[in-house]
Length: 163
Image (cartoon, rainbow, N blue to C red; front, side, top):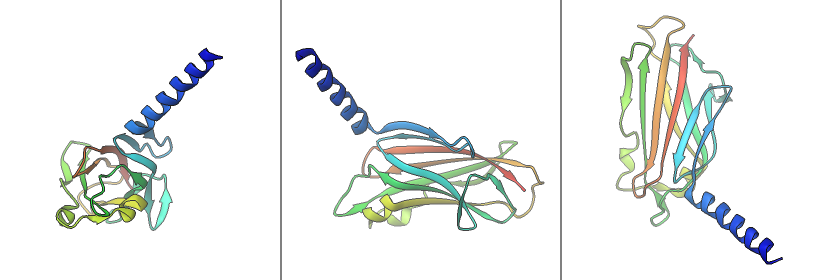
């Protein structure tokens, strides 16, 4: 009986340690979206095209595709505010940079964002080039989300194809 209590205590302690560390990885096998996170908790991550959730990574020239993180926890909260950082780097199949924005949320550096809004959803958008690329061209999308007041970070990778 004593051994059972010890084992149960160890199992609960290990579970709490895993939950408190919030380290993990997720891969959507349909879209290929790969997420690695440390310090954050991620309820869901998905793509949106034409206001609809999708696993389709083909994108038409000039159209927008969004990477959404919902139920995102782990930001340091200061007076009800979170201070997110996010970047996007998209390269073509030859390694040429198509889009490079090292910090998409600098406008919130001094004011922060309501923590409830950040927890609800954080979105990063990419508009496919309208010209200069042929149908079938592939793009590599890399994004990072981080907590500017803490140590949490998340990295996402995705392959897109031009329709």
